[in-house]
Length: 62
Image (cartoon, rainbow, N blue to C red; front, top):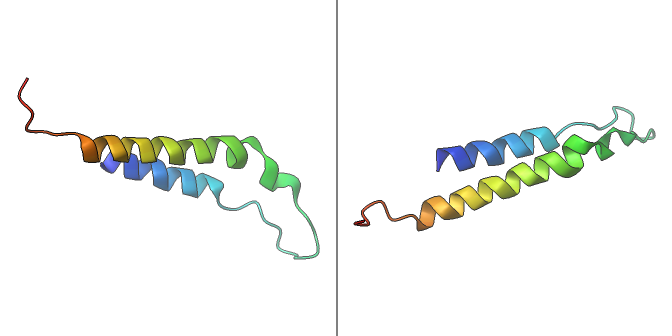
């Protein structure tokens, strides 16, 4: 579960920033690959890991 939480946290950290200090100036930096593709993908992978970790039964006999 901790790996999933780390992936989710890393995704949100990668999504942050990119804004402009001046509210009247628009910054195109918010549309780069890291914020549009990489960060949401990491969050979804982290959520998938969390679902798998919750549904995993550690006491299952093989």
